[in-house]
Length: 442
Image (cartoon, rainbow, N blue to C red; front, side):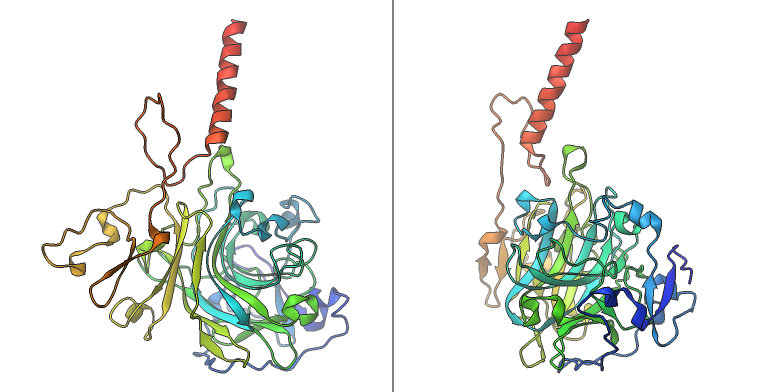
């Protein structure tokens, strides 16, 4: 089928899909439906036009799975055939100072058998074809060394992988820290697709609009207690497929960490930090309808029950460029807009060289008495208690790194994304040498 966005969707018989090329999965047939977690109540039938290719009303027949066709152009855009459809091994390091992948995530450590969340879908700007921006759920086990096991699902904008800037539903897995195993979607054998209603790698439609309508998708990843496989559910009941437990070492048992958040690639075009956006492209403090979010964060416990995530922590590799907040709202505030129960809301984004104005509503007349000085354009450094107190949080206090400005003629300022002083000095030195050489030649 020809999709309006240029994709070609093939209806492939279930037993002929790429997963069964894996030596551990040959001769396997369809499985019985998994046992869904207790407390999981589907909200109804999802819209059929959740992906662009379904807008025409066409679909795949029963007994087949919908697979986005890989074109020769997709392969030519890859740096090498061996790396096609795979993440580089360097991203396994969570200390982004040594790599080009940057994260803003909420995470929790413990013994987990699944994770669920609703994540807003945006179409962030990506600066170069070699970069990407994504929002996803991670289910992790092992160490961030050579034996990391991950299961990942969410949406992604990747011009190099897909050839356009549409947000696309994707999956990923690895069992050795992104070294030799795993891939995106169905670009290698491993993930077994079971649905003919969703095409992994196809564009998602519609998307959220800044300040207006918000659109999110709900994803659930959990370990089936009957067979031990990790299943993926999209929306309110579509079983996309499963990762067989035989693919993994640590995840053959349980997960030790879950993460919810965003990731971008920073190739430093021109020697400076990339302008690639994460999420909506706005800082998390702008809140609902402006910043990207995750809501209704839940995990699956040892009894196969969905429970609210209670020990969430946040981490941003470069908070001056991409930040993240963990906020729990009440019925009297934003939760009424998003849902009819209290829920955690997480925003993530990038400030695109904008001026901070009082429109952020960080301090308003509703937050203090009439004669209370509320400040101007300040980010909060803590939170107010119910009894009128104020608790300062050390992680919210500003930290400024200012270079040595001795004999410097310009006035100092602090940029939100400061340049790498070493790279700038090297570039300036090269320019000076070139200028002097030109004068000597004359």
